[in-house]
Amino acid sequence: MTNEGMERVASSAGTGGDAPSRADLARHVTLVTVAYNSAEALRWQGAHSARLPGLVVDNGSSDATQAAARERGLGILAFEVNCGFGRGVMAGLAAVTTEFALVINPDAAMSEDAVAALLAAAERYPDCALFVPRIVNETGKVFFRVDSALERRQKHRRPPDGDACIAMLSGAVMLVRVAPFLAFGGFDPAIFLYFEDDELAFRYRAARRPIIYVAEAEAVHLGNRSSGPSARPAAKSNRVKDISFGWSHAYVMEKIGQGAGRGSRALAVLRLAGSMAVCLVSGRFGKLRREAYRLEGFVRRLQGRPAPFLPPGEPGCVALDLPHAMVSEES
Image (cartoon, rainbow, N blue to C red):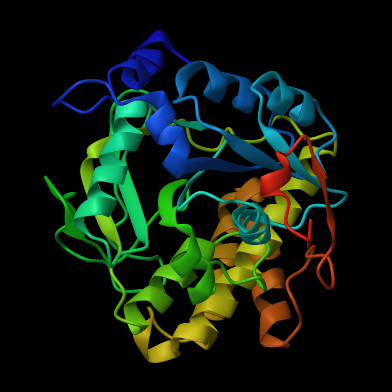
């Protein structure tokens, strides 16, 4: 990470009032991070983020992820296999005993004042269970999701200047009020990877539940750096991601209804096939492989098959170094 990125984290505190008490934050918020070969990212996060009690849900990592979690005093829920992001989050939340959880990617960080700003918003909006901060990259550029890739593109794409109810979210960083979030169902366990946050936002809209954007609370997200280099060949790693992307794309389109999205699933197949033809003619073989894998995943869902790479059933996890009060019976 660049020095500029480190400075973004250091200066992301709220603008008003004294620094919050770490003990006060700890009484209300538990950090939940889903990790997969994330040792390097977890160590970066520990050096640049608020110190909160928390746990790492380890999705079958083969690196030093668990050691990095222990270095920070975080508990561990360990799966033997990769259960996906959504299932990982839900397993972590089931072990949380505080009212709130800060669900945050390993390559994201928030200051204590920024977390306090999210909590202050939660106090202002007691009927809301889901809050998202202003997310910036390491150079300070704001990342704001106005809409999903599955719906028509909105013309006005500027992030709000203050608190606002928004239609889409990024699952990279969010504060959840644990009990109502779990009662609502949280992330869909059928999804292994990609579009989990889109699907959640669509369900929130349908249920007329608010998602509150808190501009005062800033999170720094490096982006695509949660996992270190995989022990598998790069082509295989991309295959897992790209097939999962295609499957989840089709699955969420199916759930929200074709009329609500950007065209039909049949048209989506044609677009992917057309993109492959263009890549073949232009010699862009890397993108051709990616589009072919996405089409494979998309067709798998059209055939009614479950998400590829998602373990069947509900794989158990082992609770390591968790305070007794945080260990649920399922753990």
